[in-house]
Image 1 (tube, rainbow, N blue to C red):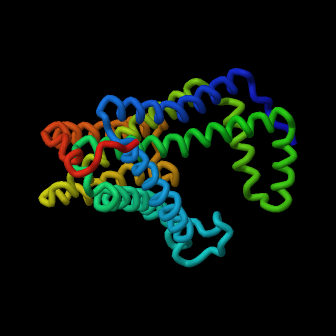
Image 2 (cartoon, rainbow, N blue to C red):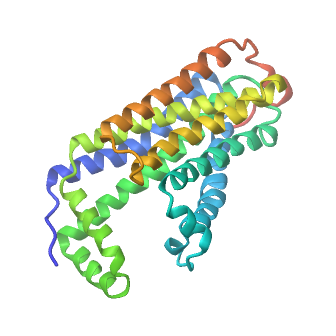
Length: 291
């Protein structure tokens, strides 16, 4: 089995993507910290909460319920029922991140960040949450792309595909699709990833502001379920495209994500964050000497 060699230009685009997705989130976090004199630990709490509620809690539960065979587990009636109904599957694929990520924000604000009530805390958390997602998802993905590209050019990838074909033939198609994607990887592909992440991070910051004020003001607790609903809708739309419920071009999906991201961030920033004059309350309750 032979695969098309990965060109120098494709390597350049992938390396640029790797550098961007690993360094830009950290740079944004540092600029925000020093400009606003915010505690970096708040940003780390956002990152850590994403790790706990998404990777440790959400993904395993979601996979056991919806995709057991992907985890090497036997199929079960619930998964069969859900997977036979693409619209239901898309809704649940959206609900899991909506429920777990927004609840993670809520728990963080009620526990480790409960004494930090200055409004900058909300954005600090959002930068940590959204930035860590960029590093983890796209940073590591582009690193894997580069490793696979090197393997393709050396012939090691073809050998691996042959070995996989003997034990898991159903995975060969995905591997060949990956090789084709890397061979055709373009500046447009890189740009789509960059633009999508920009609006995704805007959404995460906006949702973090919403849940922050749901905790800070009991009269606004309705912002928490609203954040879950909006998050679910956004990811469910992506799920509907993935599972063939809707058929729209990729640029159309990017526009939808952009509109939701801008709307959530703009609404939260201008209607909540900008109207809050309390910027130093947390400094009265906690020592300033913290990294």
